[in-house]
Length: 468
Image (tube, rainbow, N blue to C red; front, side, top):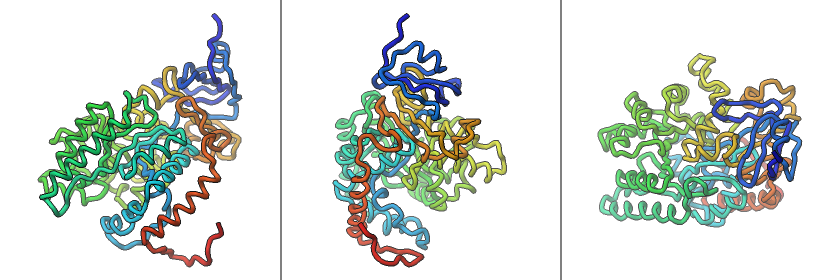
């Protein structure tokens, strides 16, 4: 039988497939045609059976599926990173109103476009090929434009905050506006049964910001369009306190009673829950997004109250999100694995293999694209990452999974493919002028911070002005 024509074969690599059997090939090859993986296996077999237009020597690489960030703010934070000090002695809600929201609202459409492009580049450069946005996009068209220029895969939604706090008479109008915005964006940016590179989801800010009617409409629209719903919930005790006061139920119990939980619903943080809520998550098949760095930085009490390893063991689908603080998902892997070993005094909790599942197979399942990405096997899209092992953290190479989780990070990402397209090569974007982007981002970030009116506070004196 004649060899099959393909576009690319990468051969001689260590390949962590994340397939159903979790095969790891020490001398493996992967064949790509158009958008798809057509073969993964031993180098000798794949090269014998395929005639490639381009053959890439992969002997220096460990190849993995592209990583998936389950919760990232692609606007607001990237252009103002680091501006909010750690030591603001105010309660969490005041930090949001005084430090977070002013930065977000100071962005104009062009700023959000640039911010999304910068966030996408940061993700791709560290191996993230797909993401779920956190729900704070104000200018969706511009954000889609910026993301499209990078070549990344993602699910994004318009900012939906439908509760009329302090003005009950305005509530019907706010409900209508929130629901109409979700309907409109799902029509304009359809998922096409998961096949679209970029698509819209109903993404609710969460906490107490949306009414029961908006939640029910979001879930109905997600079911109708074959997508999901995402929202923040129960990072702190303030969420349970609010729901108990206003509904008589804890948040996740209330959402189940509304009929808005399910396997296409993703709840972020979920630190402060009780047994009844834990059982509701398991019963409904809902997904939980753990953001370990954000939880620690925000002092959510995750080491005391977090039940995320128990969730995973109970069959609740768990995935990871960066929350935009640092989008290198490999740094989150060793943080996640180490955190729960220590706080449970149990070295067997959250192994390297379990941690890697959180940003591959589990995340693809939560995003409703488990048949397309999350593993390297024939029939899936060619979303993959080549880690360069000619680096000190990889040498000598013994156990690639352990070294990936405990020793490596995104600095070793040499090449990245998304949907069969090489978007990172030799550590640089193939689609974006990086130097021009960084210069533009610096200028825009300075302007956004000035427009926000927020002061520059530093515990240590900053002397002089930066040269541009």
